[in-house]
Amino acid sequence: MAGCELVVNSSGRNSQRASLQHILALGARRVVVSKPLASGECDRTILRGVNDADLRAQDRIISAGSCTAHCFAPIVRQLHQQWPLTAGYMMTVHAYTSGQNIVDGGHASDPRRGRAAGANIVPTTSEAMVAFDQAVPALAGRIIGMAQRVPVTNGSNVELVLQMQGNATADQINACIAGASGLRGLVQYTSDPLVSSDILGNPHSAVFDSALTHAMPCGNGTLVRVLAWYDNEWGYANRLAELLAML
Image 1 (cartoon, one colour):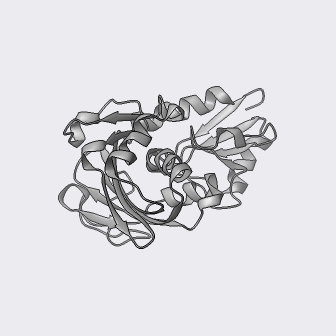
Image 2: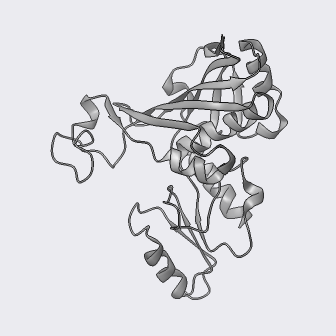
């Protein structure tokens, strides 16, 4: 690996810090891991359009977060700037992945993921929350979430239910996202009645489905529900390529 600028670890394995440091010891200058890493396992987690400015020259082990975190983090950050976030819940309806069984069987960490991926809706955890908390420490712990893995091979969505300070209508929420210059190239705004196959091949981190925005008064603030679609393969691949270009 001597003389190698960047090594991308997309294996899903050997993502502990000791293994990644071994790659550096062999001569690579930086290692980028295409999944969220636990605190202390990497020098930095970068979500494009959210915390790019946090990247430092001395960062050697870098996590590119997850496709789901890239989908919802820019939206949450944008809304938080206008209506500060009190608490929230994230649910991703996600295409099944190689971390699940194709037929019913055992699983090392999650018995639900051991069930046949192509025949079940599978409730499970989402690593996206780890990436979000690291990339947006000011909001760490304010959002919890999970995944529902479903029998499609690609194409997912995120539903966010957010308790925001201040008064907001659905139209104001939509206008906030539609007019955000900082989201250009990352979040696409649409009023089309989409389904998951419609966003396959879309390079954005998120396709904001404005027709599904809801807002209602709740206590001293507003309870907001928004939904965004994402191609969990191609959208994330574009963000990873952009991160490599930054490095």
